[in-house]
Length: 221
Image 1 (cartoon, helix red, strand yellow):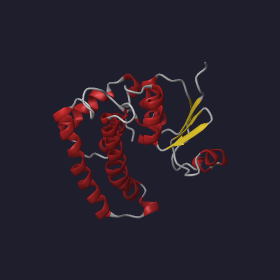
Image 2: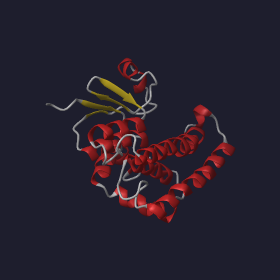
Image 3: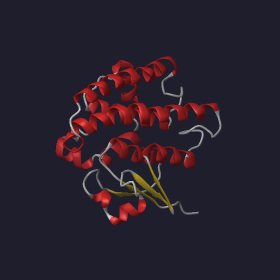
Image 4: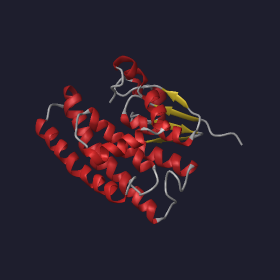
């Protein structure tokens, strides 16, 4: 039976990296539509028909379309590597997996790192908010300490011995934090370096940030 056609829309951000990375972990062939964030490409008729939210990443899997990076990562892993890259449904490990994924996406991605992006990188659109930026930096450090404690006590990964999609999500946020020159501590620095040595991460990083790497060496957001 031939595999389903997979098309990934989006490159150039930590959120798009997540999808490319998971597909490389799974060894699945796919096509890339290399559209970028805030380039106007997400407002095209073709993309809006796929994702009315006009956000990247989005992925076509056969006749199905999914958006939101954490949902895509989990769906791909659940379909192609259950019990390995995502715990079995209804298990205690799956509950912990979901807990960490939701935490990464809310406490690190949306509530802190994206606040920095909106009110620092995109201040011309969303306005300068120095108090919000300072609070986001402090809150990020406070929240990150919970992951540091978990990995230090139970590691080497968030769920113990095995790498999962939760580690993938956390690592992309650590990359994002380092790009913003936020300290992540020795435990998480070692954790990130270990995960960044994975071939799938390196392949996906190069693909996702190809244009930026060509322009700026190894520096990429």
